[in-house]
Amino acid sequence: MAIIFKLTNIQYADGEKYRSLSEHLTLRNDTIFANRGNVFSDDGSLLATSMSQYEIRMDAYTVDSKIFEQNIRSLSVELSKMLGNSASSWETKIRKAKSNKNRYLFITRKLGYSDYMKIKSFPIFNLGMYKGGFIAEQSTVRAHPLGKVAERTIGYDDYRGAPGIEGAFRSYLKGKHGWRMKQKIAKGQWKPINDNNEKEPIDGKDIVTTIDVNIQDIAHHSLLRQLEFYDADHGCVVVMETKTGEIKAISNLGRNSSGNYYERLNYAIGESHEPGSAFKVMSMVAALESKVIDTSTIVDTGEGKYRMYGRFINDSHRGGYGKISFAKALEVSSNIGFARLIEENFGQNPEKFINSLKSMHLNEYLDLPIKGEGKPEIPAPGEKKWSKNALPSIAYGYNLSLTPLQILTFYNAIANNGEMVKPRFVKEIRTWDNHVEYFGKEVINPAICSKETIGKVQAMLKNVVVRGTGQKLFSESFSMAGKTGTARTEYWKEDWDSKKLYISSFTGYFPAENPKYSCIVVIHKPKVETGYYGADVSGPVFKDIAQKIYTSNHIINNIDNNSPNFTSVKDNYNSYYTISNQELKEIPDVKGMAGMDAISLLENLGLKVNFEGKGKVVEQSINAGENLIKGAIIFLKLT
Image 1 (cartoon, one colour):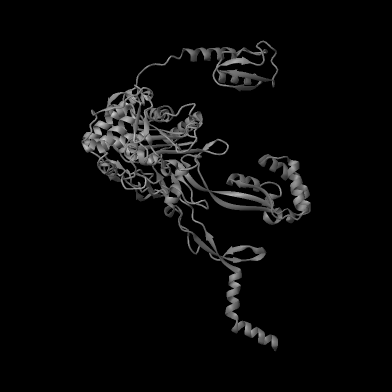
Image 2 (spheres, rainbow, N blue to C red):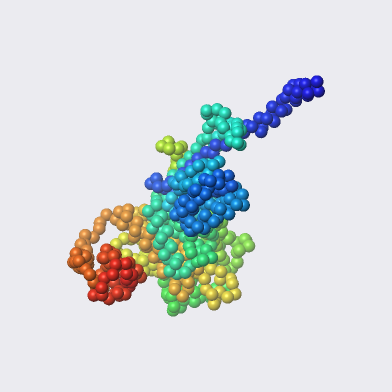
């Protein structure tokens, strides 16, 4: 009777409670994760996508002893082939795990799908989880098919934070998760209750960026090469389409503790610093717009050293430039010329000069969707950073700070006949072939100054390259316009005189007539002994980018039709063809041959070839005429 009473009580009085508890223990909602959207370049190349990776473990204890002994050797051999280490070491490791009743032995991680399917077919593992102890844990990772291209700008969205495009457009990319009801069955397995998901996941939308992978590749490698040559701390380069503001390339490279360069921080967007001589163009525009100074106004720069308010201002040219025009002061980048003209004409009313700069939006954020934009700072009278030296210092690019992208936006406006457009990283949002949202050109200021001033500044920037501080960059094949920049940095440190540090830059556009692209290159702390002037350090990167874009995008209409001389090529071919068609029993003389021809010839004769250098062969370790022994190692020196 007691038992009957208790059953009745459980069934009716506490029935709802136990039914709810049973459902809680045997039913669950499994999340079905939505696929994150992809990030594409402007031509559809994949910049970021989600892909599965697998971590493999083994329940060594659950495998039947007979099956284990029959297959452990063959499993170890396959693991050795795929993952490295000897078969014996794998066998020892797995046997030890079985002996210790290890049910979660680590095998490997970060396997792609094809490798996962391959390892799943190995002996023992092919019996599955319960008989073969095979445990595979799947996770989704963000992959970048083109490697480290614009990595900081593309960004990420995970435990580290959400910088770059991935973070700025996360609401579009992440999608919406779904879920499916499952019931617990025997052996701890979970089986779907219904044929369909209770809630279907909605995949994230795709982002089409403005990045041109070809220009990005050119910019990245050109910057990297120069950073390595000058042993610089870090640097950045940005290429912008003049009319639209679309960012076609952006590379930010810094050094790690091993001295290798990688996309460390987004310097172009986030690093605000004193621009130095690059700011003289802004000062020139503000001065011309005031109508108190013209390009022909004469200034005495003396012998290259001038004292103002208790400190000396120096020009880079020894002996100075003497009396020169304001236009010439920009071409040769005279600090004294700019400091004197701005101080003498605006010293009694500095607000007029500062307000002119601010009217061109130079003190305003660009309001980029990407987080972390550096603060633009241009002090005004009455503020903490203002002093007697502030005005002349600002005139030639000190006592203020701007980011590289903010500087480039201004130069791009000069190239764009005065129209200042907002830098743009994303073209549109898409789902498959469906257009969701388009991001068009945004105009910050339709005219930063008069057309007259624009015309004068464009002519001066062209002359900087033709006959000024950028003269080393001049090329008759294509035209460029721009301004060099060499700024002292960390000069407030006591040991600066013995450990000088500079920021080298070049900012401009190309072609000089009807510009298509603007570009800025900034390199921090190059090795002073190698060089530090903007024309030497950053200028070559700018020229390299411009030259390669010219040749690949056909900006120019006329190409010199000069036929190259192929005589040397024909001689190399004839020499290689003659020797390769002989049945040789002796070591041939390959001195003077092109390296790739010599290597090909010797390897075809059965020799193993090691070499150093590039170019033509100047030395061979086995002398010509010695007996030919297949498998022998021959060393070549190329130069």
